[in-house]
Amino acid sequence: MDDKIRFFRWNVIINVCMALSINTTATILAGGDSLAGWVRGCCCAFTINTVAAIILPMGMIGSWFAEKVCNQKPGTFLEMLARNFIVNAIYVTIVSFCMAIINVGVGDSLIAVWFSTYPILHIVGLITSLVIEKPVTKLAYGK
Image (cartoon, rainbow, N blue to C red; front, top):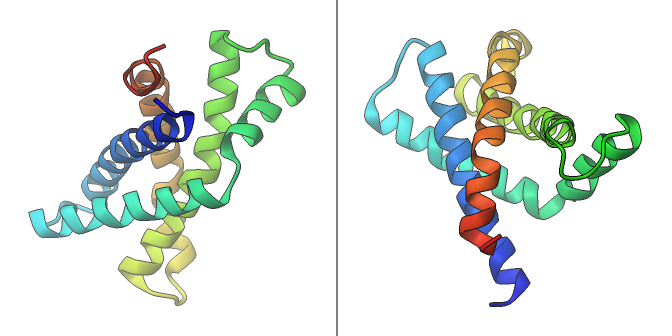
């Protein structure tokens, strides 16, 4: 199988898992929502994540941060933690800010609404990415 197809498969699975995890947390933090609202949020989060993944070289950014800034050796848990920390910081910033715009619009309360959930969503995203990285990589790449 072609590496581009494997990467596409990996990217889709990761983005589905992250959208489900982060959107579910955001929905709970917002006091719950209808099933339709939750599904819409998951679809929006997945789309935003996927577009961001196409535009931004997250693998390179994450590896650079983990290996050059944090001085971690590739393949170690601390490297995976540092890499996922920065990748999630970027993705969660983009997705949660876009979702705040979608849900409350641009206005005086936008930043307050966005930041009221951001730290928790970053932690949830980090934990989710640490838990799913190896199984999804095995599923997509067979490694």
